[in-house]
Length: 465
Image (cartoon, rainbow, N blue to C red; front, side, top):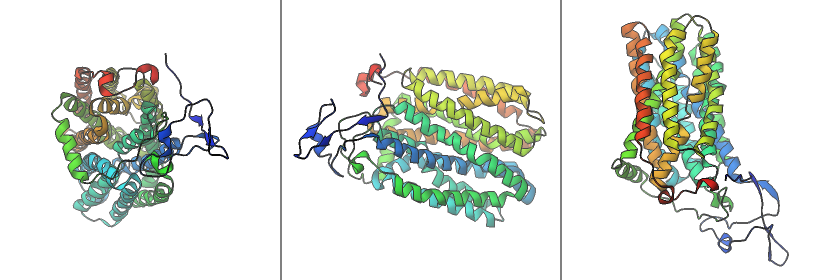
């Protein structure tokens, strides 16, 4: 039987003589000292657990990271028109951004263990602001690769989904699937908030003001991260949400790069890693690499205004929030590998129909595709993180970072090849069909992932979730 844990909890408080008064919950002597950091205290009040405020700040930060990554797809036509650069060249800059976004993630997760979440994320936002701001001065394609590809890619990669996995693993012992879904949905929310605005700016005021908007937005988030985000529950004298037993804050882990490489070295010796990396590479190829980068120019090829196409991607973001949160809820209750197989299979079917739906105007079948595809956009993330946690334990956030790297490498390859295919064939049709076939392969790969017994993985029984 499933049990529901409340978001709020009654906590004990010491009376005037130092005797602990409880509210029907047993006390734990180890709560008096949680190792490094403040002692765990229990004020006598009914309040929301601090983990939820940390998750809220993480949500807002990931929203920003998604917004920063949404601009390259809007720059293809303006940069092609102004500088005469080929779509393949512009797609290459986008592919560098996507690849570094993923390759940075495992090292960022290790750096968060070494220096703390706040410092890493604040530095990442500053790097993004610099990269986006410098693009307004560029005159050559290599400068686009350097500013938007390298700097923005490194910065946004440090706030990738490995960031969400790190926060979830540290602050939550219950509702991890749900929280992962919510934080993953933040990426879609960022697309929703930024994409229509950026497309309007590009269409009415050129692409440079849009780049400046991204730069300013990154700087605005920095104070919120520094003031409100905390690295570990022990920093504020709490146990993780869903647990009564405090967890001592681990000492800073030296050798962040070595740890990231060691986690990869250990993971590549296991079959599940290659299957997860392969499926997630296809996930990236069919979302960030294909749809996020090339949907707007593909729709524009069929006569659809850029703002209308960008608005459709924003609607994808709306329904992705619903789909990803629901996926997190499902991941807490159903077998993750079977969920992945269903998600990839449905995505492949939808991509096969897309070439027939593109038209100068928005019509009901296209709306149906957008809603359907939106529900599936990154619904794959919660079960993928759950499988990493199941197979790789304490290193799961770093291993997921490497799996995410494969996601972004897949996205980078298709972002580049999509532009090349458009230059060579005059349309994107072959790319849509090939991506649909890849999704079918991913569905089969997900079913091959072996299931690890919950007891061996150190996971709670379903009744405790």
